[in-house]
Image (cartoon, rainbow, N blue to C red; front, top):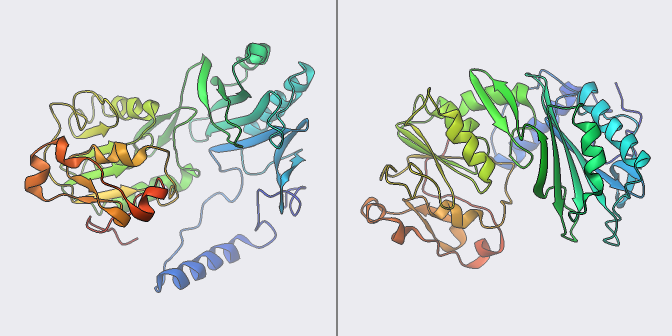
Length: 360
């Protein structure tokens, strides 16, 4: 089944080949890059699987960039990456924005108002969130919020005044809940407008289980998002510390451990509460494992500093962050400040050379 926009739209690249061939190509690419065979687990859903899509609103068009032309926008009539229900939500927002006279944002000139319409979906639970990103905080979008309040479980107005073409911003106002909840196996995970969550929930449970069955001892879940890996690893680990820079994610992990996992999962971040890396209950032990999502190679600004607040890590030049000796880690947070120099200082990403690696 081909999308009517395939070949022009820059969103998809392989809809014209059988899915089995796509999987085979990925296995070949991984084998060449890693020097060994790597089996790829096919998704049970080939289409309508994504939990988030960001659609740009420019030149009065709502859609994705044209293939090979990042300055051009294709006005989409359909998108097979999200569910039909999620796409219907996007179309309603597009129609209402034009009817209400909300100006689209011209990212090439830095002028205009409505920049992005984003849909987030928890396909298993059936919950959806609509995010409207504006240029600045002029309240022109409020009539659209009023209409959209009855369309989704959560409607979020976010804004940014950055000239760069970004699809996320600071939350200005929320209608309904500020989060939606997804079920992944036995876990119930809440994520907000800026939270990181896996793109394919039907593969997520397999991914969590694959990592969880290989961990022991104390585990760091770096850039943990809503804490899926942390919560999945908690039954086998002595303790789990999650680190992220998104405040909503830290609250989600603390909420996720309530009742079922009261003491095993801890969450780090700036000015974290008791039980975090600066709280009185933090375990002063070296981590034996680290989980980092490989898709997030470029991390948010300041992520390295937040991660370095976890006792047992230090900055180490081009190697990013690595464990301190056990006796140094016990001396407290003062010895865990980052000392990042060289190439690593140019990128908000982490590489690890001394933590346990999980062969996947």
